Length: 404
Image 1: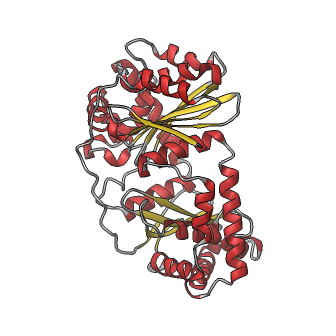
Image 2 (image 1 turned 120 degrees about the horizontal axis):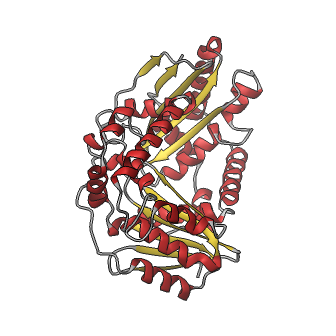
């Protein structure tokens, strides 16, 4: 059996994958992100993630920071628009300590007012640093336009003004409302037996009081296509072109993932890299991406170039997208694209830490984890006709945001 699973009486789902390794990776994935914030709370999901490390009923911030680091391990966390993840890496002998520490900071944090005030200043510095990176800011601004009027629109960090308004009470209210046990998954990958995993999961998380999510996420309305230009102090022009795409449950998401990889994946032979960089030297970086959410998705193309080359780059992207919407993929080209994508997936899963994080997300979303052979089999069944159909559905009527 590749995976060992159990569901605790309080609803927390647990999954473990045994691999031979000196290190063990474990994580608690919580279905709570920035899209679950109320308008007066923008930035609170991310601030909460920071403040989980600032003291519990048993530990001060210093002791939390040193608990695993003194043993050579690591404790970290991140926030997305739909999840908060607290994860740790330790030697296998310290696995139980890592799981207990995660449980302590998630369920017993006190959020001391003085620490919250200090951490707000850290987040304000993070916002300032982020705003200095146009290649990142343009994606947030694009999503604000694409999902306008929806909780998906605002960025994860919040604004300087919204973060300043947050207080300890904001964090307590947010965690009480969204840190529900029916939306949590404890996962681990490492050289731990099923019995060890079961004992640790039950001891650390079995005593947590059960809670269920009551609020439902609202699907964002489709935005009309737009073309917007903003002035920005960047040395280059940046451009994002994109459109709404399939959600996490849509069976066409695999075909779109393959198509996006063909168009602008990380390989040097992607369509846009060959056209814009290799043949015409118009850009250093161009990439395509696909981000699925629980009820919608977003497909994007981004590049940066000298301002004098901007219009030419846009024309070339449009030209290449027109090709994938009309040209049939030959059997040889499709086979090579599938093999390349399958290889990329296999290599990414060689990282036990990445595997563990993906495993938690998969169980939270689907209640199960697909093995690599299962994924490759679904990939094998995709036809050239499906790729063209997906290209026409997603890459018609693209919206564009330009930073000049």
